[in-house]
Length: 279
Ligand SMILES: [Zn+2]
Image: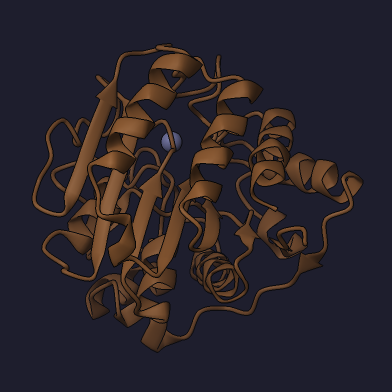
């Protein structure tokens, strides 16, 4: 059975001149429709869902649009866009699907910019964290975006139900994720290291966790590690296929939430390549 894609056209309604713009997701959705995936429409996350991750003052600031930083504009109605994207992650978690909703989420922490980062890196609510807390089961979060998910680490550091594993480019924004910290295992990689080095490191990362402990695998699925993208690790389709195979081998309830990836053509194809190995 093919993995279901979570998407609403509503997420294309902002940010036309930003690198995190609608075209990346519009094109990815078009490609995935062409491959025959079933699409599901998400509902906005509830206030209770947001409160399981973010503090009340931060949620209020997003609602009021008081969240402008040099990377992350305070767009009109961004609260509604961000709430719907978080709802997409929750639906993906429930059905074992892949949410391609935007905005992304893994850089935003409990009350905004996380672990000393100077911006929220295009993120408003931490979608994957909201979905993981919604399910509330022992979860392995695997973050394959080319950037470190500093927000996700801040949220889950010390949480006994969750282990966070991230492979990311270093040095790069946000500058965190250089060392392991408690239940957050970080594997920094040099720019454009290529498929082979990445997969070798992924194997090492997965062998360092006790997979039997987890009921759920939540994948922060960014594609900006694709060769030539914003946080390139030199990955190609072959790399994403092997990542998919490694995830399939874990044999857990698995869901995916889109993070970065700024070339829609590659994002759509990489998602299909990854999912072909799963379903
Ligand atoms: Zn990224």
